[in-house]
Image (cartoon, rainbow, N blue to C red; front, side, top):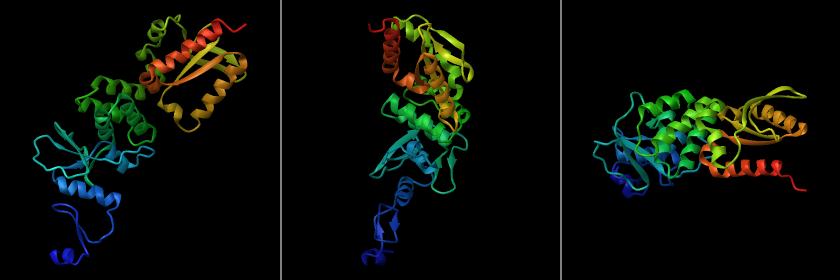
Length: 271
């Protein structure tokens, strides 16, 4: 091996990693290098990196997140985002291919490691929407992993994802309205449109409708069905606002300002 390296046919990339070529390492090779350099017996790709290996799309994080149990004595190579975890959950590491944590565990850990609540919610939501982990698997992971940051927030977001629009009561939309000085709206209102009976999440008598979309609303033909329903309400004379459930938790002030603005415009229309 030393001869090949001296001959510049192979390249050393750390203490234990040698490439049998001279080109830059590919992304997959870089991930293998991270695990090998930390220690293949104790290290696993984790967080967003494990999700990306599992197929996560449209989320950019070039860092290589790698975890070991906190008792492991390791040296972290340059370019690796280090994480020590209290313990491994039974069966959490996928050992076929690059060692990595299962998507539900990776998503919950990534949410705890995120730089903000918004980033944490986005990671959890994208994991569920892209089918990398089911809501039930995410719920189970929140029970198994404590995390050091935003424990309550992560559990609430996962519960929202799992329960969809049924978790509207947990968000206590009426309380948010009262905090804005808005009257309490009617819930689960039934109205008739040219598409038949429509069940609305929230409606005021002045015609303002707020629809809270759970994660399932982004799937398949659910978007088309929702759009048809919203259009039918607008044609009937109502004004409809759509709010995604996780967005309501993360962008509470922004969405509730829109609700207050819409209510005020209908209560006091311009002359």
